[in-house]
Length: 501
Ligand SMILES: [Zn+2]
Image (tube, rainbow, N blue to C red):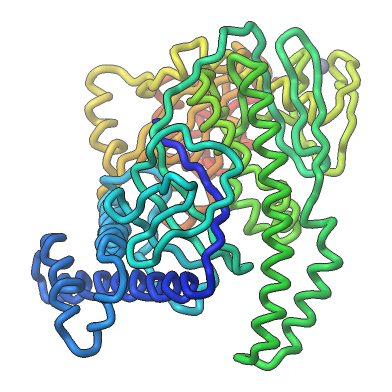
């Protein structure tokens, strides 16, 4: 498997000058390649990537206004063209539905005003000198702060200038997985703002991890630095100095946060055979103004990413449970579900079994239980909804491809409660909606539907309602009048209305 090893490098003033030229040329070539492809597309031409490369590098070098491209390492330019090619391809694959997951935006032009600059070199563009220096083509031998050894010969290196003015070399190396011996323990992790993580382990133990809130703590200094920056005249060298102070402070916060995440992730992977976390809608939470800063400060996305990487390397499992698992609302002892559970409530007592709960620990226990159930059940069996034979083909036509080239399918989730059934709706492989059936006065009824905000206004709501109604008909279950989403369909089909005696 591939891994990245990153080191600080200390170029001399002359080398910094050369690096700056390379950043600039790589950027120009990236932009030229994008423009070249766009123009070809507008003209209805198909260009091979070799042809794009020939035009923006080889041919461009002979022209008057791009002659300076020959001053820098051509490996860096070739990699830059390839990066732009990949950005373009990802965008089109995402557009046509060939690429799964989150939608990829149109590639953007790079700007010289971006404070983070990079270029990439493959093996023929760099070498490790016996004395510990790093040779970069057309730049020279650069001093490196080797804080740890590279495990093997790297296949490529990315040179980065961070906004705070520091230079880094990030090497790509092939590392052998190092599986850890089997352990019994598994853990459910509830990520939060008040506590970074609340961990429930099999065996009933609990661990709390405080949220260091690095950004919140640095906020006073940062605010002052930012205010100073805002007062400086645009384009002045004092402004540049003030900008660097802000960037330095931000860099410090990010490094401290990353360090905490690395340590916690490694500890979890070492002590558990499987770790269960919620599949969080972080982008959605960041859109919420009141939560945004705290959510970003906690950095859950980075933490989960590190957790997955480390688990892969050490032969352990990380499993995500649905973001619509009502982990906070459900009593982890008796399964009783509360109607509401506002964020402000940190402790509550279950009316069903009278057990006093800590909100986050209760959620972590539910995540652990749901994750274990899903994983033991063949990793969440992908099922088509239970329709009869003839009907299935009709359903296929109706639901597997609706309108534009988007595939959507329902996945029945495993629940540990008999009186419950849930479906996740996936559009192009991405979780987009949710249906929930529950026991209402002795009959199974549709009680809840949800559509991810990202799909609002795309007609998914209507399709989901139709799907729900077909499922209700096929399985002879009912609809709760409290489920507002399909309520209007009940008027047309009163026979499905649940009546509570
Ligand atoms: Zn209870």
